Amino acid sequence: MTSPVLRFAPSPNGPLHLGHALSALTGFDMAQRAGGRFLVRIEDIDVTRCREEYVTGIFEDLSWLGITWEQPVLFQSQQFATYVEAAQWLEGQGLLYPCFASRTEIDAAPVPGAVDPDGAPLYPGLHKALPKSEIEARMENGERFALRIDMDRALAKARDRLGGAPLTFTELDEAGNAVVVEARPERWGDAVILRKDVPASYHLAVVVDDARQGITYVTRGQDLYAATDLHRLLQVLMGLPEPVYHHHRLLADAEGRKLSKSAGDTALSALRTARKSAADIRAMVGLA
Ligand code: GLU
Image (cartoon, rainbow, N blue to C red; front, side, top):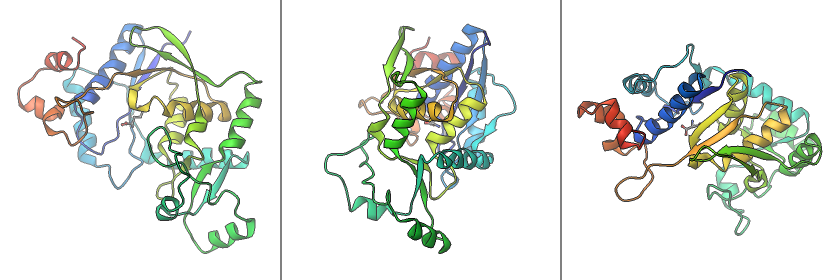
């Protein structure tokens, strides 16, 4: 048995708050208990929203919490070539297609009642069957495009790969029981795999990086539970190993709302300035 490998994968688009502390500590504690390795990965593909100062803040906050991690840290913004390579491979399998549609065009053609698990309208398939000549002409014109997954084809290919077995993932629940869950990637429709604005997407980058870093346990918040459907699909299509998942509870503010990066008083740096200790933070997130 190889030793467990866990990671904390924040996006540096705001200061870390208590919710991130719960996420990072959950993974770190699990790695410690299992005698495993712990990595930090900076998910900064969103180059316009991510900032260097937040990266520095992440490292400061984690150190203050008593968390240690391996070097070097992987920055996704330095890995675009590998995401493009993975997308090209999927495209070569006939599983992705170019989509030139703008947000406005997509919003103007909603399929009534069809929303993804995040509540966003499902892609109505506008450019799914563009003639090859039009695709070539638009590309020659320099029109930008996203690459979307052809969900029907992807599901068929995954069924082949799995020899008819269902697409599943293993979830460790809060009590530590392993539960096998059926993945339903069709809920996401023809999701974007390579974005128009950056040569990556969250779903593709996370799958490529979890595999290349040998992550055996993915610990993250419940808000990403449904995304696991798509991650498992991509793993099967690309022949990548399957990690075990643990989606931890989310913290809410006093009004019961999910914590957000703008929630100033729960920012770890603010709590540090207010002379809270790492032990106080553990108690505040329910890990004492
Ligand atoms: N970068 C994501 C976030 O900050 C987490 C991704 C993951 O853990 O899979 O929400």
